[in-house]
Length: 298
Image 1 (cartoon, helix red, strand yellow):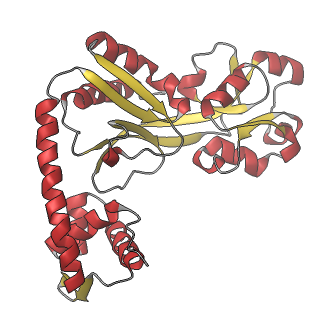
Image 2 (cartoon, helix red, strand yellow):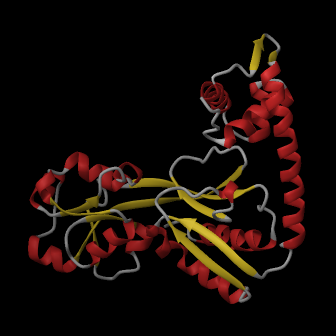
C-alpha cells in the first residue's frame, strides 16, 4: 500500500516534537494544546502505519524511520522560512490582491471594514471568498480568515480573538402583524421558522436550537447560507436567528423573546505565519481589530 500523508500539518507538529524532544515544548512552540500535539502524532503514525518515536520518561526520541522523515521535514521547514523571507520582501508595499475568507453571513459585519480599507489603500484589490468550508491558509487559498466558533488550533496559524458576537431570534414586522408576537417559548409552537440544511446547522447555534426545539413541520424554509436565512427573515417568511449587529441594520426587524434566547459566538482573526507580517495583511488586520474594539457592544 502506498504511503499517504493525510495532513501535512501532522508532519509539522511531529517535526517540532522531534526537534524539541517533548510534547509540552512542542505545544508551547506551536501555541496549541498538549492534547492536539499528541493527537496529530498518533494520526501520523496511524496513517503511515509505523512508529516515528520512542516514548520514554524524558520525552520523545525519533525512531530510525522517524529520523528519515524529519530530515526531509527539516529541509521543507528551511525552504518555507526562505519563502517567508521572500514573501516579506516582495509584499512590503500595499498593492496587488488581498484574499479574505469567511462565511457568507459575515459580509454584513465586514462591509464597513472593507470600505475603510478600500478608501485607505485603493491600489489593493480585495477578494472575498465566502465559503462554509475552511480554506487552507497554509496552501495560499486565502491570506486572512475570519472564523466563528472555538479557537482554531492549526500549528502554523496565528489566531487572534476579535469579539464575541451575540445572536437572537427576529421577525419582520409584517410577519408579526400577521401571526402575532410570541410572548413565551410555548407560543413559538404556533409560528413559522427558518433554519439551515442538514450538515450545516451544528455550526450555527440558532439553526441548531431551532432544529432541537421546533417541530419539523414549522420549519418552512431551510437554506445553506446564513446570509440567505437573513434575507428570508427580512422578507417576512418566518422567524429566524440573526446576529444583533446585523439585525440592527434593518428597521423592520423586531427581536423575539430576547431575554430568553441569546447565543454567543467567538470570532477569530486567523492568518498564516508566513504572511502574517506582510503589509497588506497587517493593514487589514489592524482595521478589523479596531472595528471590533469600537463595536464591542454588538
